[in-house]
Image (cartoon, rainbow, N blue to C red):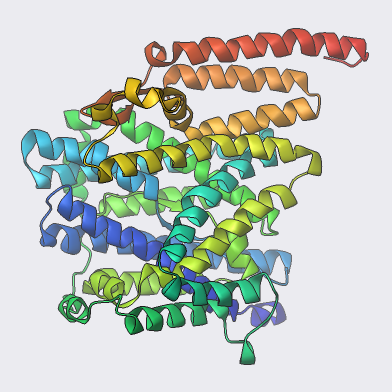
Length: 517
């Protein structure tokens, strides 16, 4: 009983953790409402009456589960401090399902209702993969070096998290620098504010005040956005089941399966990151709960899978416990059910919370070096490359889009004259798998485990043959995944060649050193 009394549902660091996770989730909600409207042409009733209430259900289920899981870990181990796993809508799947599942349906049929139902089925498929994968993920974790699992996260953290928010801060220094100063003072300099007021809280408040003071915000937009309209979640299982057995499910399996695997591996890597930070959560229950959250999303109207978020070490470093997860689930649910997502986005600028997320990225990247053997640092660096390629391609695509064109319209030959664009795209496709495999291969070589290095090279060849790595084609100016060895045979042969070289020279070296191979 004494142990139970010592567990605190709210720690001082939970306020900072909440603001960081809340801003991260809020960005996803804004993207959902914006893209569903502008790209798919969905009416407000569909977005705010079905999708966002479904998102609320999935986030509430997941955030509450991981908060109670943190409590369970505390009671089981007696650790002084535990931090719940962060959780929310998966950003990659959000874009993939809008652009490559629902948008084609809208273009073919002009029926946004059908596109939504197909999205439900796709979301369900991802949830089933995530749930089923939970029962084999433990084996993947055991055979994969920690450096390989953390390197992928570190690459994503540096590029898609830290760099993006760093750009936002430097885009408007009058608003962004003060919050950055508060975050750096406490979490890098170790200087606590008077009365130990959380730096994250002060960062968000100061950033918001400065944004309004310097005229960055729109009071008219804020007033127009304040429109409370209660929308309770409803079950859409009948719509879901009718679409699951339709031909559309087969048509979009090439998108659903990779996205489900992507979410599964990403969540597994985040579990490894949490363990490296001191919180060892059960793999099976953690991942199966993630799958259940995605399945719940589909059943209640959301078309977007959920995932265990990157960033646990950062939240833990801020002193967050279980409360930040509970608060995030409750507040996001209230916003989604009352239709206030637009109001909050009109009130609080992204720049106000950017410094928190920049720090989270720095923490994750640092962990990849601090929580792995020192001699594995080269493997971590190798694991960075695919994520850097993915980020670089995104920058190129955004630049071309701003100029009113795209990669397809510009043409690969024209781009090749300035940079090896085909190599960039190939490295970007399936980068989460490529990063993990290349880093694992490097660790095996560092440790002189030549047989393991051969195994990882063969694994790379097999995954490449499916098209999950490196496969792409350009359709209507857009880069899309392409599956099968017809698109990736050069990589298959290349990886098999690497395996042969490792086998021959590794055997020779082992024999020379009289080691067993």
